Length: 474
Image 1 (cartoon, rainbow, N blue to C red):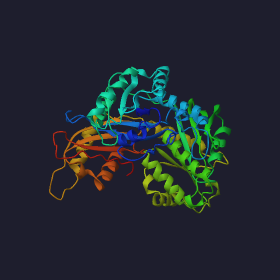
Image 2: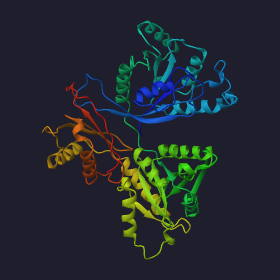
Image 3: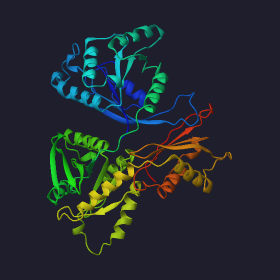
Image 4: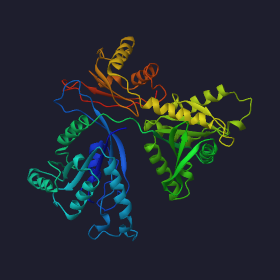
């Protein structure tokens, strides 16, 4: 699994601004109102190596997580929101979110405000981190260091007992380069990731009435053992743990999705958001289709979201028992390739959830994809393979520049992420990226899952700006 960088702190210290600055785009909502960020927000980030590093130094991947502002219910004069609701009622949920972030974080960015100094709430968060056993994973950040005069104030954060403080300004970018290089170094020195969890998490997504609940019920009714039922975070989502052939997995049932214009109320809006959360936390997704209905825009949108999240996906066609015998399977496969081209590498399983027919095959395929996504190819094999592909067909350049690849390595699993140091990253964009992914699928042991590529320029070429691009589809 990817390492997790969690940003924690009290309200109004600029956590969301720090999140957006590190991510390189506006994702988390930035607003001075305490409590705007109540849930954890996360995104996958790429951190480039320091400028003085060797040519073989590769970018590093991590999940960046922004938590709710600790203590929003205690913010002076801001206990009630604009609807008159008492923010104190949110305290237990927000504290649980922060504790969960601390427990699961590889690095904790404990953020304070250099201009207001260390407060009682900062000290409470420090205690919470120590109680959660996260002291050795903290990197102290003092935000709002908007000039040299504020540097000395940033040092006050050292009183919290977490070592050196990184003074930054998320507004101007001051100090961010030093922080990012420190993050890269910290990630480099982390222990090699442990083996994947034995409990595979499977998100079952689809439009309304496709048979998601029927599939879960079919799995429960089959000759397997339901180990336990886990209460979901919402009233319409329940995670159920199963045991199959000595292996355990967790099925995450999600609310059915409709077109946005058909949403009746806010509940459907939040249901869609929770589906996106389920996709992010799952190891594998099952995109459930109704064989009796044409592929809809909703399913195409879900397919796009799965590709964007680099999520291994099994396309499961339900109600196949109701399809006319005249409709050949081959014809339907061609139809799906046409309607869902972004998932043309994903395996397809035909089932009848009502009759519990081939439902076990769908789960077996999910396990197979999880194994593929967890595979790490050796650097030697990847270098030989990609160099051979490049020799057979390299990217073209209008200026006649010869494309060169200096170093290749798989830097992460789940999804398999391959970083390449090249002479001109722009030459590998677009069509050649897709060609390269297609060729890789023919050779690597993870041909049915998304493959993420990262291209970066050779460090000694100062005029060739580093370029990153990720590909999750062929």
